[in-house]
Image: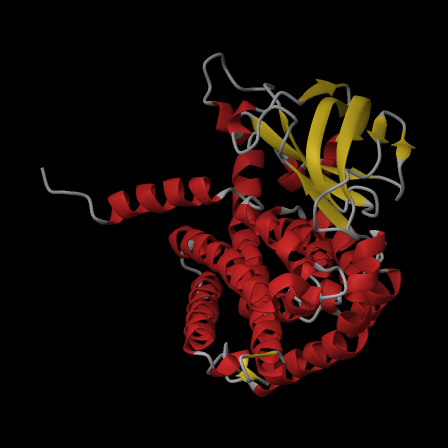
Length: 401
């Protein structure tokens, strides 16, 4: 273990889980990540290994076959996995968010049916809020779910589904006006539907099409897709929680823990970038000595390490706050904002330390340089985080009138 990004106060079980995950990352992910990433190849063997480790059920309660661990344990595991290859952490993140939403808000039947299969990795989750013209403006979604007999008919187009092709269960947010009078606030007329499907691309069930993978600058390997619903019929018992109109709250609860996850990913990528930078600085020589001996590089390493340490501390604090049962949207927003920004900066500094070799695909830092920008926009852009942080601060520090 490195000196940086240590987490104090962990139990023996937590330390054992993290040591196992770190060993898996060093042995099974790091040696193949760059090659798979360059081919944009789904890491099937790595995913099977994660299933065997039980990571797909890490936070699912033991009564459903999971490990029943905390958000902190999960976030620290994500940090380790992202250190190896960020795309792999994305594969389990959307699965985790759907499992969390089911655990917190699902009916007893929904929990009993889905959670054991999700814990085993047999059912793989994805969630879908965004649409092609919306970005972060979730309240403006146009996808609709209309009551029809004993079920619902869904129509609309969704965008940016991580695991859109490989998943078998998608939590889809749609507008449902049923039972809501004219003038109801948009966020109070949304519903989360649990949509089961076959893995793959094309028409994966009647009325549901996954057109294909979106070609991306980075974040490769994991499939990012659109989702098109054309008179997709969903039974009423697949409304999350059993009642319409709560979908926005369900999704925001899921995204809140997802932001801790994105912060953890930023921490992991930044750690790896620091490792690469400090190692290369001791191997590369200029003007008769290793560049690590030059004060300019030492200053850069000092700044990088400080950012790694600060981001990790904020991420751990946000996870622990959620685990304590307290509201953590302020801390999660801060952690996500800081970790993603610092990740970008640490990666760029490591890139600069590598000089011309950082531009070569033979060096791992080139991959990290393309991956880091995704964290600036995933689970809400930096600007959205600052809006959330600002509003919450004004609630906390409301001036006396």
